[in-house]
Length: 400
Ligand SMILES: Cc1ncc(COP(=O)(O)O)c(C=O)c1O
Image (cartoon, rainbow, N blue to C red; front, side, top):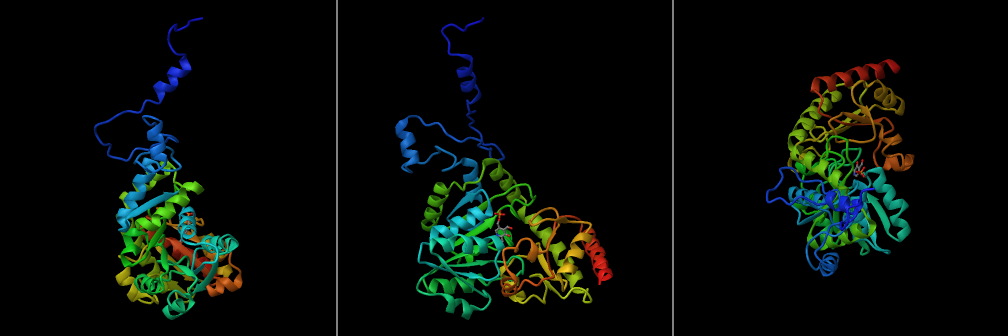
């Protein structure tokens, strides 16, 4: 047997050799994936100081990781916010935003047009911790103001609501919230920071599911919260203690998505406008089309000045659940999936999927018709997307 006399053993040397991180005096073009749980410190005092936030640096990736930090600060910059933190999912971000601003006895006023999981986070969890919620029509500003009580701490809305495509007037709502000393949190997922920058319109915190348009390729889950330094300190504290930070590889993928967000959103918006206009002409089967870029949209004027373009999300009412199902099954192009914001066109029947948590009454209150179909328009050629929709409508007509 061969012994390396006077030297450390093979395993010890292999571990040291394999974890020697390269030191560069150049920057890489892409942000490196810091796939590590821990970071070395020079001595025990440095470790204690980094962990205690007395000096900048990294110690443990649940607390801070350079790739996650690069993503958070890139999105904060694009949102026009002082700070950001990146999470493992959009729901992780939404939970941190809400839970960091609310305590037992507080009230939350939210739009009745909300993503289903956000609704069940509030009803199934925050309520158990003593937070009461009221839901209002966010386009009825008098009703929003009337719903705010001295116990209200948060007003929560989506820039473009899931799935009804209602556009909230963020500047007006922020003014109402601030008159009452209430924090306004905006879920900007359907719009993305390319279409709308809620912080600049007065929102205090903005949340994004970066799983959607920012990531853009349906291959990663991530979320971000951005806002002012004081509120973000509470968000960060909650993130550290609940372990919500984004994984380094996920952060890398979202950073790559962010680089092409603008060109993708322009193309998604152009195709979505063509599809929405086509659907609006199919008056025999399509009852209504909801798309911010259509003149018929109830907030068309607001959408023109609040959104840079109409975006990739649209919804339409086929009149019945059965017609919705026939349409989805006949749509040759496009994925039948509950997600959105991808290169792939994705169509879904919200009442039975994304908003399954709502009973018939809550669906009606949220304006979600039984025959509603939501489409997230991808980057396929516009003629192919329209052709697929046209063929699916032929099937809907035949099934009547
Ligand atoms: C408007 C909106 N917000 C938040 C989320 C949650 O995002 P994630 O799935 O990344 O947790 C979704 C998911 O569909 C959404 O549609």
